[in-house]
Image (cartoon, rainbow, N blue to C red; front, top):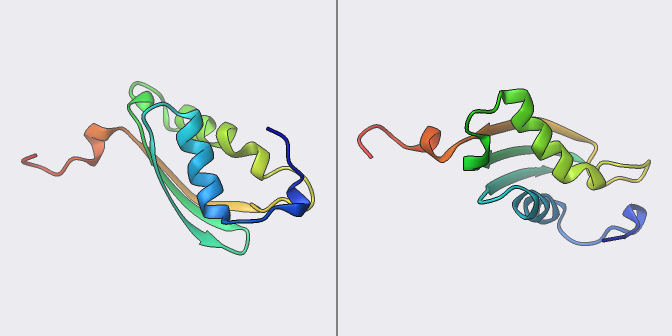
Amino acid sequence: MSFHLADFQGSVTEALREAIERQIPDSRAEVSGGSGHFTIEVTSPVFAGKSMVESQRLVYSAIAHLMKGDAAPVHAVDSLKTRTPAETKQPGE
């Protein structure tokens, strides 16, 4: 997929969510923020057995194209949380 980030149009939060969910199997991404700064939470079984750094690298790899260049729509990820589905379950579920 090729596009020019300087000409990016549309929802950046949706672009982030779609990129993550496309690249990371069985993932669910929640993205909020704006003005180039975003908060991302991703849940996927792929993170099982991985360190926090390894899991976060997977996410950054999925969104790297949105962070490249001087006119990139994403300037910073202010908060990135990754977890497995088991880590999201409430006690008693």
